[in-house]
Amino acid sequence: MTDEEKQKLSRRIALRIKEHREKAGMKQSALADKIGMSRPSLNRIETEARDVPSLVTLVRIAKGLGCVLTDLVGGTDAPDEVVPLAPVEAAALPTVDKPAG
Image 1 (tube, rainbow, N blue to C red):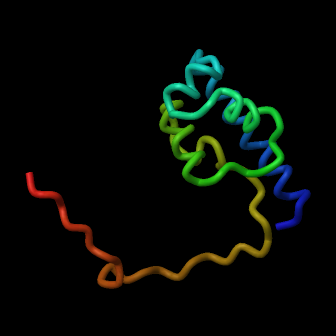
Image 2 (cartoon, rainbow, N blue to C red):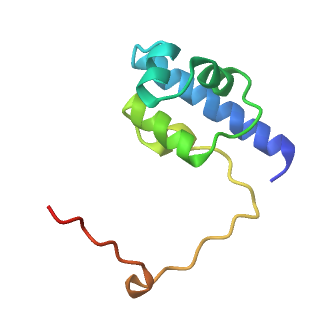
């Protein structure tokens, strides 16, 4: 992905975050508090849009807005070099033990 494509993607994500936040009637400070982020950090994500936020950050923002991750990143132009992943056999997936309780 070129730098220009990354900036374009970042701007689209930033716009979607702001649109969803405003649609939810939330101020930046309210969303930032809800997801455990500083308001200046959230403001940088929404306004500077230089870098694509990390997946963890995007998931936190989506949860805080009551939407799903694809609402924030869906519909973006994927780079041509993306290669679909091969299916994974269920037996190859790790298991997670449930806590006793």
